[in-house]
Picture: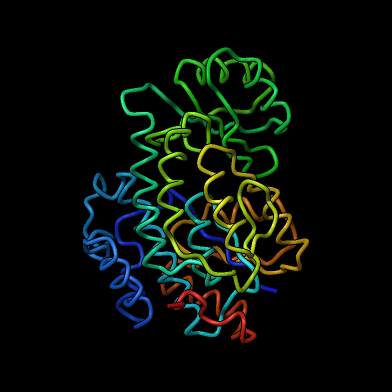
Amino acid sequence: MIAFVFPGQGAQYVGMGVELAARYASARRAFDEASESIGFDLLDLCRTGPEERLRQTENTQPAILTCSWAVASALAENGIRPAMAAGLSLGEYTALVAAGALTLADAVSLVRQRGKFMQDAVDGQHTAMVAVMGLPAERVDEICRQTPGVVEAANFNAPGQVVIGGEAGAVEDASARLLAAGARRVTRLAVSAPFHTSLMGPAAANLSAVLGRVNLAPARIPVVANVTAQPVREPQEIRAALLDQVAAPVRWEQSVRTLRALGASVFVEVGPGTALAGLTRRTVPGAVVVSVQDQATLDAALLTLGPVTASPEQGHAGSRR
């Protein structure tokens, strides 16, 4: 069975999605529908940038989501559809579009507001996030808890890779402690806020009211939630999962293991970048893993996978109205 995995913030680049939007009507429709929903031309943003504007969180999130859904649409035109899905952070919204639980229009509107809420939550504060390599997740979590100030595990990405975030001083202190404890390296991330930490509490509160007004449908395929690493299908549990993930860690490593346990033997990273493919290979060695983000990688994926016919409930679910 095929699992689609969708990237989160940080995967963006100028030019993403443009080629497929020119070649596939469904991909172009994705950009048109998303642009109409949020009131500006996302395809032009992806085509011309500039990078500084694309990097702004409230622009980055709808741009990545739309590009990822455009790629999924091109895959569907070629007979490749998922039996299950998951997405890293904002990618969870794309997964829910793929499952028919969210319309694309609602999803891009939600993540644009989500991005603004996240940025506003720490406006004026000195914060940081770093990737920690080479220590078990339990040890990273333990050292963060022992460090004064706000510093927390934010992403459990893969074996030996954990992202921490919080107040800049506390993150620096924890980084030194982690290196002393045997971490192979710590790398500061170029992000604008400490996502998925308790500092995002105000963002979660603001998003709660917005989510409450959005119509959700039962997911047509299982979507593995970031916070629990368990599949969700009903609107009530989907809403709770989206709200909880704002200020709680992303359990990506376990999410990938859950997809594998549900029967996924093929993982397709759908959207810009290749980071999730690397994390997946480290987490479930032996699985077939491909990344699709443009025509060349789509062609390569088709050679690897061949056309796959979805069951009726696994159809192009994101077209729900």
